[in-house]
Length: 558
Image (cartoon, rainbow, N blue to C red):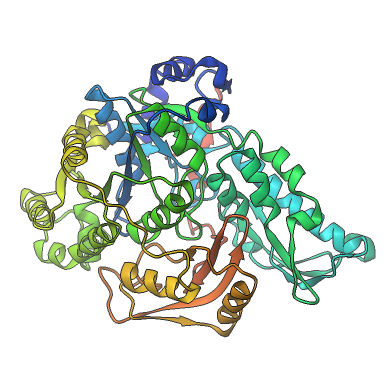
């Protein structure tokens, strides 16, 4: 039997006109800005017009720690929404936009998989509606105006040794992590050390995702700290008089993108921060719109519950004033065995002993979600190699911890394969109350917030700071930024800051090597371990398999 690739399945799909998809969910065509037949932006004025309408129920999808064996969080999110749709419920899915760095790097496509995808898949994975380019241009405009200010007399007294604002590009490119620019003589700027981040790590991306409207966005952009002066005063975008131009570049990017699943469930795809180096959730704007339009909204947070879910709950929910009603925790038999020490090539063999060792990773993520008072449904993303004994063991493990459990076959069967999961979610929403609470209050010290995240979410015994990180936190406190939540940049593969420590590590420290304030986005970033805000490409990039035929059809994109 031929196993079709994701792109093959997506290209065979019959899409509805996006105007029809919009009409089905209650979006009048007056709110639509069409990007061809199958994509549209939705004007943010719809939020004002529907302000008095009740919100639907919010379902957060997260996962266990990712492994090379795969988990399928986005696939599950799409399939779950399709399954709820099949049960005749009014539902939307709200996802993040893919970044081209991972698309051409390790990850490949990021629009779901198999028969649980959002389409048009090629567009979504590549240029889409231009949001990433707008964010990059806005970010780099600030960088250009900063360096131009220094060149033109530097009336703000910017110390070029204390510039914190980096340029960005939407590609994995380790060559750009650390550079020297301004070379070539007096007319080419002030020579200084500089560097690039990937676009999705930009504070501009965070601001786009955390802004409630264009006025809020402009205010947040104004507050961005880009450098410090010779007398250690913070220099902001407002000081550079750049906020208006930046907002102008972002005015269309701020509007959520409407597309559809293979089964025509309406989908918002908007904003794409990474959860390992940023806050990892789609936009407040898209989630807010979906909650006004649908009775049920399925959304995902990047990577596992220690990263994406923690940031969704502690940062996005705090700032947006939203509360999830239930959480789906995605796992696979293969990934749990990998966490139990089985090599990737042996994961298809039944191994209950390894499963028992590796299931502690799932156990910790269940505990993490329960810390926030949100009921958990565990779903097992099905593989043909899964045995009855393995599935039975996981089912019993979850149910003994008061978690509903369902096997998901959405990759293979689409919405039909997610009916069991959808029914468990609907049961949970009806019978288990969400008592959502934040992990820590605003008025806790920055160090205590970090200690709380590290000990309660990761299972660490302590947090260790480099001198540079300690100094940066002291400066943040002195400048009045100590009420901000914490956004931890940490590897995604382990609960610790060492990606090789699988399962549920114990007796470890979290090492904070760097810290800085994202004053516009409204959080403090703590960089741990060896995590980089500019990834590199792997030895064999996914880009090597991507091509386009004589008819303009893209092949090899996942």
